[in-house]
Amino acid sequence: MKTLCSLLLILAIFSCSGEEDNTPSAPINDSFDPAEVMATLLREGELIGVGHTVNGTVKVYDDAGTTVVVLDPFSSQNGPDLKVYLSKDANATQYISLGALKSTMGKQSYVLTEMPDLAEYKFVLVWCQEFSVLFGKAELQ
Image (tube, helix red, strand yellow):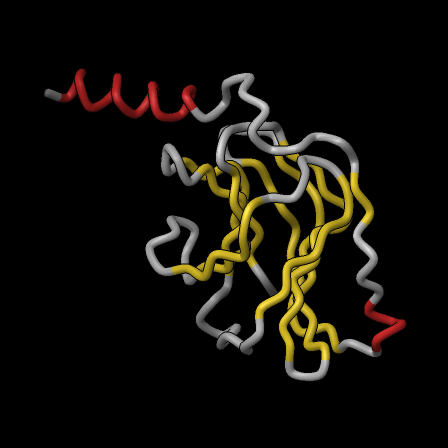
C-alpha cells in the first residue's frame, strides 16, 4: 500500500510537468501600472518553485477598492491547467481562484472585485488544477 501511494504521488508530480503547452509561453507585459492609478501596495512576496521552476515577485495592491495581484517579474515551468490562487495556506485547501495563468513569462495582473482579508489569505500559488500539484508559492508579507 505504501509503495502504491508513493507511485501515485510520483505520477501526479510528473504528470503536471509534461510538455503539454496548455499555458501560453509567449512573454507578456500587462499594462497595470500602480503609480499611474495611484494604487496602494498592501502585501508582497517572492515566488519560489516547489518541485518545478517558478520564480518572481508577487505584489498585491488596493486600486480604489479593487484588489489587484501582480506577478512581475515572473517565469514558470510550463504545465497543463496552471492557475493562480490567493490561498489561506500553501496546500490550496481554502483559496480564491484568480484564473488561468496568462503566460509562463512576463508581467501579469489578476483583478478581484472584492477585498479579501489578507491576514487570512497569506499565499499566492501557481497551481496545476488538473492534477492538484503545487508549482510555486509566495508567502505575502
